[in-house]
Amino acid sequence: MSWINILIPGILLGGYYALLASGLSFLFGVMRIINLAHGSLAVLAAYAIWIMADRHEINPFIGVLILLPFMAMLGWALHRLIFERSLKGGALIPILSTFGLAMLIDNLLFQNFGADTRSLAPYVDSLAYDSWELPGNVYVGQLSVIVFVTALLVLGGLHLLLAHTHLGRRIRAAAQDSDAAQLVGIDARRTYAIASAIALMLVALAGLSLALRTTFDPYAGPLQLIFAFEAVVIGGAGSLWGTLLGGVILGVAQSVGAHVHPQGFLIAGHLVFLIILIARLYVLDRLAVGLRRLRGGSQ
Amino acid sequence: MLLSASGIHHRFGSLVVLNKVDFSVSSGEAVGIVGPNGAGKTTLLNVLAGALRPLAGEVRFRDAAITGLDAAERCRLGIGRSHQIPRPFLGMTVFENLITAAMHGGRFLAEEGHQRCIDSLQLTGMMQVANRRADTLGLLDRKRLELARALATDPALLLLDEIGGGLTDGEAAELVGIILEIRRRGITIVWIEHIVHILVQVVGRLICMDAGQVIADGDPKTVLGDKEVIDAYLGGVAA
Image (tube, rainbow over all chains, first blue to last red; front, side):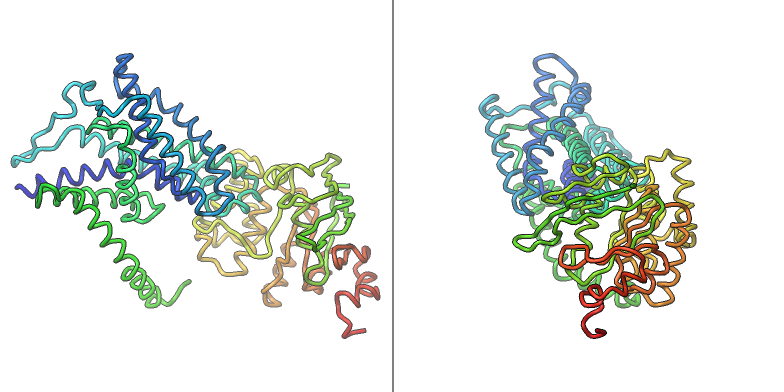
């Protein structure tokens, strides 16, 4: 019974990681940009929702809806001002420029809000602590379930968008070959800007989830970035359902680690990440090549 | 004149690839471009398609200057292009490749767009592979897809870059049939090709380029018999 009480919260925590990682994964998949400001942007969104809740008594769930269009505009602007320009300089420049952006955001937040930790939990009654009891003495946190379901909806929605809509095909075409996309009349620049706007809306949802389930401070971004990064790498960069799997593996590992040793939470997550990374490099690739050869080498 | 380019000048570093080239094509015409490697053929096509902005010169389409427009905007105006090395959207099916082109480049709405795609599929003989993913296609089918995708954007002018390269004689013959049908439908064609014997089956006018300049322009037979052309392109061997 106790294992189920470890596994289920781990899986649900994975939903949060998947939600957090979806924006990072999406931006990488479409534009090959590794956005190191991802965590800091999520914290920025958390502060924006917190201000609405604290100063104007706006419920965080309403607050995030108000924030979404602004995050979309921010995404559009970031593309025009930073992503597009730095992509022209090769693969390394976007990493440096988004790292700079992360430092800028962290320190601006620190300057404005100080080092106090905040949380949105007080603004949603007792939702952050409530849980449902399932048969067999199993408890699941209501908020965790909401976040997990949101992650499923977001990833499913992204999948449907990319697979079945004209905008989705346009994004896939531009992601694959922006020159060829231009040749069939697709404005690649505008398509990338739209993709950035979508990624930043995902960041807003991640920021809300972060702020509801725990506390945050101006320097909370980098740790969230690491979690998102680990989930993306475990699941396979650029693959949406892989991102969900990566989040769940990371969540379960952390959950089990915390059970084994009080300080095992982070270590277990990092360990699993490293093991999978190494396994992928040395084992999985060879396995894939071998399988392909067995199937008769169809490309 | 459907499309005209005048005084097109471009260089890569100190190498002049297009030296004040004038080029024009009228509606319904099919023009072939030949010339040795490095003559500037593909660069000229890039300038016409909007992939490359020349250092000097002007491109006009239907009597409007389009020099400043990018490839996407020119595509929507009616200039389609196929690449020498096919560049399909690999993760999509053949049909998705076409519908993407039809919706954006051709600005078709749903029903009309589907019709357009089916038409392009039939014309290029790709109906039976419409639902295959583009990355499972062989070279001939990829070349056909490249053509079909350009057709789906509803072009008035089609720019073809060495679409016959790498094909067997039988495959090339099939391709010629498709391009003749495209021409019969009134689409203007500008075609770069090294395989001269398939080119002359389609085009009514031939241009020969060498070292960034047009050295001959006119009836295919006359151009291929021109001494300068033989020296530059067909090689001193024959001479």
